[in-house]
Length: 539
Ligand SMILES: Cc1cc2nc3c(=O)[nH]c(=O)nc-3n(C[C@H](O)[C@H](O)[C@H](O)COP(=O)(O)OP(=O)(O)OC[C@H]3O[C@@H](n4cnc5c(N)ncnc54)[C@H](O)[C@@H]3O)c2cc1C
Image (cartoon, rainbow, N blue to C red; front, side, top):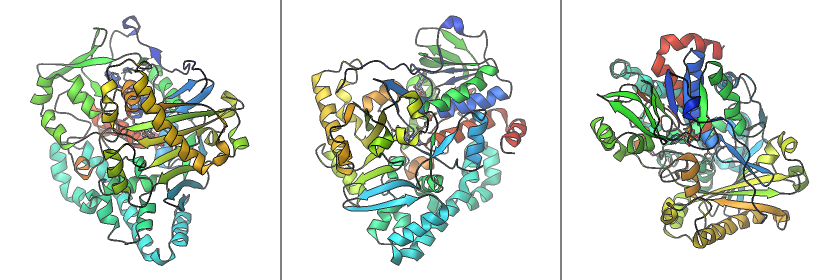
């Protein structure tokens, strides 16, 4: 391994109390996709918004970092639904003022290594179907029934959003419509729904081959989220040109143009509530920012367990509600640098998903109980191959990223140690796990052995450090059927002036968090006020 040099890639403005405006219309906690989207929409409606980010750079999981001449993303490997003028693409174009471009991945955007068999997903609805039928010719009917279920889930999406945005009485009034549009099967677990279509275990495994995109294997996850993810990538995977950090970089000017700002190194210690109403936020440095409208994008667990006082959270009923949800899996990341280009190394624009066999749930259980069991999933992504701009920034180099689950508890004993100084036993554990993951890479691409210049491993403690997630959770709340039915996971809280946004409100994913941001801004100002802006965006 090479010696480390620190990261230089930083966006947002460093927080100092003297840099704050006298008054803001809204304060947003967290500069992830959810927080930035709400902030940008409100800014366009004339609000002055202050976004406060505890990390050294803005973007949350969309941030990138540099070390030793390489650049890696921490939470974006591909985005779907942006190859044509879709609603998703229109929202990205609006937020970025048209400055964010997306590069298509290979037609084969995902490849699934399941035991010793290889399957894949091919871009385009017809191509996706034809490819599945080619791989499972006897299952054509099941495949068509599966695609119909995905379409039904797609049609339910507006009603799912409405369920989160409407007020109590509006929901009661609309309940016949909402029930009709959101059939019960959407909230069953993925395995139960899919195993009614076929008993071919390999086909089931291929359908669920992207389970890592929501962090739960099929017997634990909600069919609705499964369907949303498969549909999201159905027309292929895309990568933000210039790297994932460009997402936040392209949105921030909209917030600044309205007099707002995105501050980094700006940790909020407490959301201050007095006489039952939101008063503002107390910063870690003791500075109080007064503002009657606070939007938390820091995750629901952080908001109600850490940022609100226990009294207020208890009184508002959130302590009890939190018992119905749990954190998603935590993960390991391996960030790899090579001194040759993606083309020279033959790196693909295809993600690899590597599974020990076709029983994903059993593999997860084995691994969670035994660190030495096979990794239940190893995901490998080749960002420098996907980004047509990468060589402009880092000539003559390439990068690879590996992601795999790992329980937070394995690392918890080092949680109070300083980043980078957690001691030899921590480093040894990281190294051992990292080496095992590297072997998966070499097994699939043997030509890379001996060519790796540098790699480093992140653990759930790294996620805790840069994202503030207390259990290092990969995707905020776990996407169980129970979570997806929690009516309180909505922008409006029971504390006047406090609003929620981000991946816990709808689902994980850059687009999930972005749509939560849209929902939050809409709920705050009301449909009537935001309608002209939406009309402009979706015209
Ligand atoms: C390894 C990995 C791979 C992924 N791959 C993809 C992918 O390929 N495609 C895709 O669409 N999605 C992917 N995702 C998911 C996606 O990145 C997230 O779901 C989404 O970006 C979450 O956005 P958010 O705004 O909800 O939260 P975040 O991005 O987590 O933002 C929350 C922010 O709040 C800040 N914060 C927390 N507490 C405080 C505080 N007290 N004061 C100030 N700030 C605070 C945090 O530092 C953080 O920046 C991936 C995620 C991970 C972890």
